[in-house]
Image (cartoon, rainbow over all chains, first blue to last red; front, side):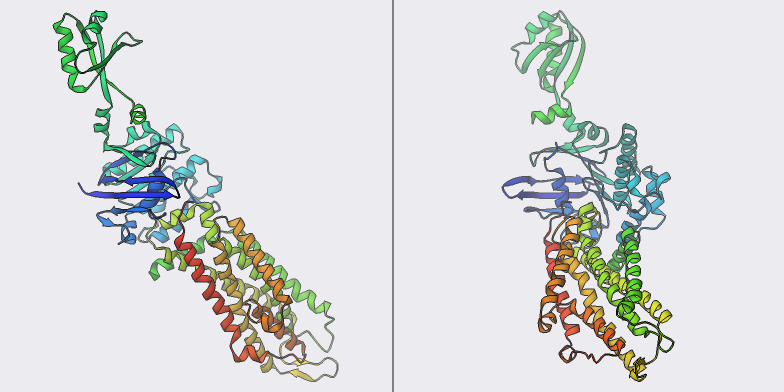
Length: 299
Length: 276
């Protein structure tokens, strides 16, 4: 795998305020990278620094293995971005808005405009002035702008803002299809953990400007396992057997009648064997997971 | 680099061409130019008679003078919106995340303003010229009391060319003032207001200055040139200022002003963080 985006010690201070601190992003080719964090955590500031819209206080950015400062134009020919809210000329139609960007991007055929507008579901209104669009349609136009020049790396900042559930699902499919068919790498920033969980294969979590977790989604999800749900009989005996046992952090009965055993995944087999060996009938044993949100908050 | 700048200018042309204000402004310019060309000769008592039609150069200079002054305001307004408008709408981040440098972007904006200036100048010129040639006479300027030739046709043509030459750069420099103002703020409304206030205030203050001091202000030369043409085509004894001719002040002052405005504007633009 090749790193298409790597930041080293990326830092931004606004006066005394540390917006982003020592950020080391690592995005591999073909990743659907979810950049997670609550509002104000530094996601957009990081994106702006990566795209050279704002000057970092410290650190460097590499895209496609090259320093962004060394070959900005060459790199940006392969990059598309939607940063924060979609921006457009309200008195122009979607086609004309894209035509302005097509001219600037160079080497983008005219036929690409109706094609990308069809992809994002704006084909029927492509000649209408953007000022008449709904918020969701404007968001779709913003995504079309980012995808116009068939980039290899796309930054989407909160791409599902203002979209209805159907729209969110559609855009998710577009992203996943471009990733699967054309190998486009996406960096998607969002505060919607569920959305990222459905879309991405790798995530980075940022909190108060600092990266707290960066890994494959499945690896992060594996880390969210913090115990077991156990359906057994007799329960009182099982509680007595498990309480105080080595590696067991706690046992409590849940509303559905199952026991919630807090322990590491390595202890799951031991829990089962210990209960069965002592005459407790175990009818269900399933891993208990934190949601990504609970995991994020626990960090 | 030039290819990218050319593409940017083409993009700017699409945006400008779709700006409703541009067409409103052109309508206003046409109205002001025609109204001035029609009303000012009447107000100055120059009525056509069997013997004498108003001279085309005079009608032109009446209309063109007012039209050009108004066009300067339009140019300041539109150029003040050039950068601030992109910040205001947030479209600056769309543009600067494309394969182009900030210098190319800046150069393209400057070229667009220059092109816009030429368009406005050309439009007012065309409207004034069409009116003048339709309702005025060409040829020499006659004295309407003793029927002698006051200015020959070649003489008038020479003054006409000179007036156009003196006024072009002075007019275009107003656009570069707008570019500088446009970089002071991220609000196009504030930028336009600031640009207009600076321009109007400077115009008023300049009116109070002595001739020597006026010659240091770039926009003085547009009104000076047209004023000379008006007087010469009316047959008065007016003449061109020798100092301005000898030291090429009509060229130097607007050029120095642009040299002052453009790098300052670029320095501000270059240093700015794009948080729009």
